[in-house]
Image (cartoon, rainbow, N blue to C red; front, side, top):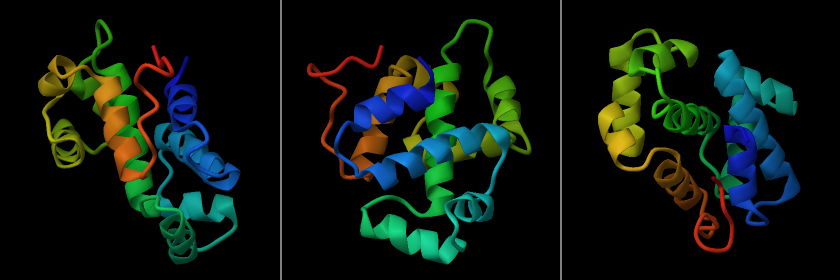
Length: 145
């Protein structure tokens, strides 16, 4: 399963259908290099209007949602054999590895090595669920592995 499927499964029924679709689009958009304006245009709104709609549902702003989407992909990819922080940063369209590491540190509070040692995707997903105000559905009730 991909990052998108695992994340949407973990969100469960904690979000309405529109919110789930926007999160799914953001997860797809993160790997093709979309910015917040492109995400908003896809939803048919301006970035400001999308930000209001996301905020009403307890979700991060368009830019933060895309940042979280990149971090969730990174959290799945970095632990994979043969992957490096540099290769993941390029795949996620970061200007350089230092910019990527700063984003990782500011969002997840760790370095690439710390992310691997801390468990990778599942702890990152739990942090995202917390940001969205969704009950943790990664535990015993559902498996994301």
